[in-house]
Length: 165
Image 1 (cartoon, rainbow, N blue to C red):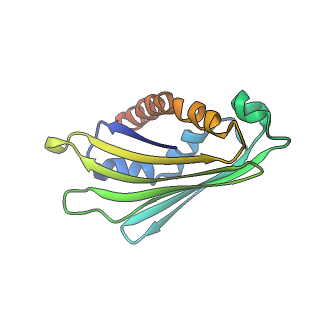
Image 2: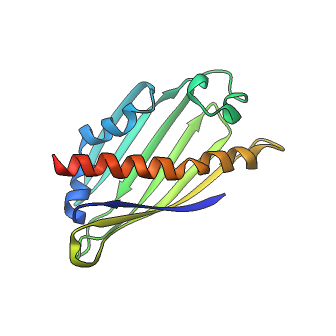
């Protein structure tokens, strides 16, 4: 199942990229998920960067539709990669999610572009999610992607607060 989401940050792409490449910001992003043994690593790649978050989620913190198919903690690794900036600050990137202990595959292509005037930045995320559970996989995908608006609103609020500080 595919879905496009757009996140708007109140700053130019250089500041947004610096925020996303900050390990403290990445740790703040994951605190709300109550992950077990979470870790964050951010590495420069030329003028781009790669942020990797890994950890595990107990079944009690998963949506009910998914939790009934999982017996123990689900280990994951989420890698957010951003390439080098173009002259206007725009960047291309990707998100890759590796999940152990659940029949889930997810990934995305991403783009970061300044809005007219450069006072804000739009990040477009083209998500692709696949849940391989006979008969109910599509329903679990729909429920997971239905949460996207809530996640976008939370990310926009957290990003705006970070950029104001």
